[in-house]
Each structure stands twice: as C-alpha cells, then as structure tokens.
Length: 78
Length: 230
Image (cartoon, rainbow over all chains, first blue to last red):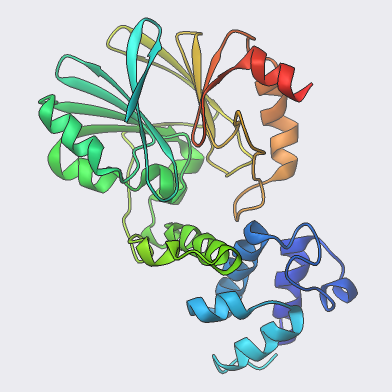
C-alpha cells in the first residue's frame, strides 16, 4: 500500500465512507467524526504510519486535507 | 466513595475523578472483590484500613480506565484476576494499553470546551501488562465467598467486553450498557455488528428486576431503563 492509500484507508475504515467522500471530510462534518471518531482516526493513522502524534497536531487535524499537512511534519508524504 | 445496598450487602462505588469510571468493591472479612479497579487513591486507602489480605478482581473489559488500578493493587495485595479471553489477549501486551485513547479524548474535550483536563491526566504514558488467573471464552460461573457470579461475553464496546450477573439480582455491565448514555462501539476493537448480533439480544433477555451497575454513570433497575428507552 502506498502512503496515499494508507491515508485514505484510515479515513474510509474509521468513518465507513467511500474514498471520494473521505477526501471532503472535516471534523464534526459527519456524525461519525465526533470526538470518539477522532480518537479512532488518530489511532488508525498512528498504526498505519508508526508514529505518535503530538497533542497540538491531534487538535489541528480538522480535515482530510489538514491531515496531509500534519503528516508532512513527520516526514510522511501523502 | 458511596455505598449501595445490593443483595442485602454494602457495595462500595469508587468513581475516578477525571474519567468518572465506577469501580465496585465488596468486602467479606479480610477478602475483597473488586470490579474494574480504577486509579482512585481512595481504593487503596480503604483496602489498607480494612486490612484486606486477598483481592479478587473482575474485569468487564480491557480498557485503561477499567484496569489502571490493578498494577498498584498487585504490589500491595495477593490478587486473583478474572476476565474474558478477549480481554486477556489485549491486556497481556503493554503495547495494547489504550491509555492514550483517554488522553486523546481529553484533548478533544479541552479543544471543544476550553478545559485543561488532559494536563491533569497522568496515565498517558502508562504501560503495564496483565495476566489473568482465570479467563473464559463465552461464559463462566464463578463462586466467591458464598456469592455467585455469572460472566457472559458481550462484545461490541470492545472485543473482550463481558457482563457479570451477581446472584441474579444485579449485573455489572461495564461499558456494554448504561443507564444514562449510549454505548460506544466505535473505538478500535469495538464492533457495532457484534453488539447488535450478540450483546443486545443477551441484554434484552435479562430480568426486569436486575440492578444495572454500569462502568460509568448512575445505576438503575432494568425495568426503569426499559421504561425510559421504550
């Protein structure tokens, strides 16, 4: 799996949405992306990329697109 | 700490300050039964004052907020740990410790509410592995000091969740049933499908007269809960 595929997979499996919808998602934009969903997403990303996100980054991860920027800080290009 | 009268006995409830998880304690002589020990310092103080020598610990599931008191208890007392095999698999590996989920939830709450709860949470880096003395796949009957406990696996909130019926009068439901909130099945290891396929039918078949002793929030008689949610 490429990084892009792993990244999308984390969103599609966590929130049970399709790939195209995943790319448009924002925090609290759908019922599944609430604080519990957010924890599940963080756990999925940390496992997929073998990283531990900083608290500031956990808060900043407010959309699919924002997540790309955050992962770049961990030298992960998505 | 407060106490309930259940089965004509005092059942003490210790609710943790940050996560508000309920640990339940039953004492008989110098022996104690503890369900889901949290990190409330009151528990250790109480047990020492009561000169407890042996503690039997029941777990309703593997999540950090329900197990975090165990390492401390094991350094002070002789313990016997009982849980489901699904729970046992998870707690056997310290890498599976889900303290960070609690931390992340608090961070989210702080971001939304302007609180600073995450700063107070001391368990984020906590790591411990636990090995049960008794485990079961689906069901277990476990007598303790004249009391009868029936464990039933109730997957959904987590893979290793169970409910524990006490003398057909009360049931420790962990996070598989609450009196005042919805059950969460979306954490890693949870399964909405398993909850509806296995756990909900089991809970629906329980007696109206059972006292629900949940992992969070207030207790409630099953009949009252059914009336509220009908």
